[in-house]
Image (cartoon, rainbow, N blue to C red):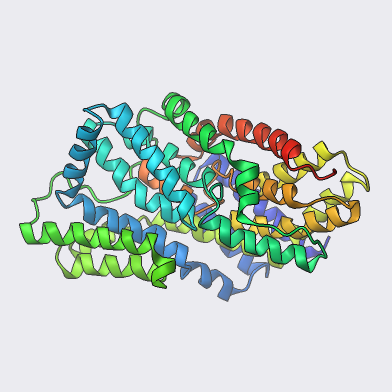
Length: 427
C-alpha cells in the first residue's frame, strides 16, 4: 500500500464518519474531504474544479431552478387536478400511477438523475393537491429511478452493455454481452421495486422532513400574468422533452437544463433573486465532494488495491455462490460512497480477470456488478439522484439508511439467488 492510497482511504473513512454523525452540513463535510484530497496530492486541483463544472452538478442545481419555475405557474395545480381526476380523487392511486410512470421512464433513459429530475416536480404536484409531505413520496420515486435503471433493454442498458461487451472482447471472452442480458438477470426487479414503493415505502418514509425542503417558497408570491404562466409551463415541457429525446436530438443535457434556467429569468417567470434562491448549494457541494472522492479512489489506485485484495482472498476456486455474493456486495458497498458508474467500471475488469482464471462465464457476474452499483440509496455519494431527493424530500443521512436498508437486503438476496441460478458462472 502506497502513502497516497493510505491517505486517500483515511480521508474516505473520515468523510463517511462525518456523513454519519452529521455535525456539519453534508455539503461542508464533502467539500472539506475534497480539499483534503487536493492538499494531500490525492487529486490535482484541476480535478476538483472539474467537479464544480461537472454536467451532473449543473443538472442537480439547475433542475431545482426549473422546478421552481414550474411551481410559479398554474401548470402544477392543473397537473395535480388532472391526475386526481384520472385516479378518481385517490392520493394512493395518484402516487402509484406516478411510480409506474417513473419506472417506465427510467427504463428508457440513460441516467437515473435525469429521470428523477423529470419526475420529482410531478410528484410534488400530487403532494400539493392532497396536502401530503414530500418526505412521504420523494425517496420512493428516487429509488424507482435508480433501482429500475438498466432493467429494460433500452437506455442505460444499451450503453452499459456496449461497455461490457468491449471489455469481454479485450479479455478474450467469446460469449458477448447484450442489453437482453441485463433484462434476463434483472426483470423480476421491476415487480419487486413497484411493490416496495406501493406498500412498504409509506411505512418507512418520515411523516415530515428532517431538514428544510430545498427550493423556492412560492406560496406567498403573486400569481404570474397569463403570458408568463404559459411561458413557464412551455419552458418546463420543452426541457423535459429534450431530456427524454436528447440522444436522438443530439443535445447535451446540462446545456438544456442551464438554458431553461436562463429562459425562466429572461422571460420573467422567475426573478434573478428567485433563481438564485432556488439553487440547492449544499446539495451541489455534496455531489462535488463525492465526485472528487470517486476520482481519488481511482487515481491513487485505492479502489484497485481494495478490489485486488478482496479478489485474492477468494482463492483460486471460489464457490459460485461466494463469487456471486462478493461481486454484488462489494460494488454495493463501495458505490454508497463513490459514484456508481465509476465503481461498476472498476469492478468489471476485476471480475473478468477472476472469471478468466476460473474459466467461468462472466455475464451473470457483470449483471450482479451493475445491479450492486444501482442498489445505491444509503448515502448521497452514489448517484446525483440521491442528493437531489435529499433536497426535494428534506432527508438526512439517518433517513436514507432507515428508508433503504430493507429494500437493499431484499435486492441483495434476490439478485444473488436469481442471477446465480439463471446465469450460472459454471455450467
